[in-house]
Length: 167
Image (cartoon, rainbow, N blue to C red; front, side):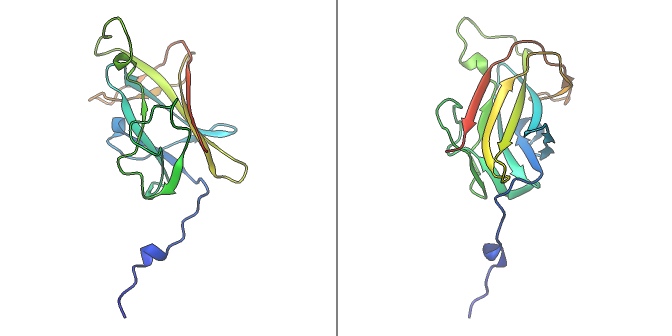
């Protein structure tokens, strides 16, 4: 008889535990989200000239990844959260990059915008939807994406919400 790969037999929970955002701004190193009353949250600042990709992994385990159905998901177009599973490779949500969709010229390369990424869960602890919104009021420091020096940024005003909900 052949050897059995025990990893294939492992049962993984679908309950959201210790969600971490992994994104292009952190070279895909998991950064833990904080609990905010009814959802998990994480703040990041991205350059307007360059969007940032992200996924959410549970307990820092890439085999428990939350991701969209396809890469480059327009948050207005695909209403689903997939996972947690190990099928997230190449499937990322995109935050920022308004310059690519903006008419009337390109903003300066240093122009940045803060966002809050939220992961909502149902009462049973299963991922319900992922949203991200522009940070508008003065709020705590935000991680800066696409910065070589890994600087921090305080977000400014204006709020806009994009959402990807579960099906």
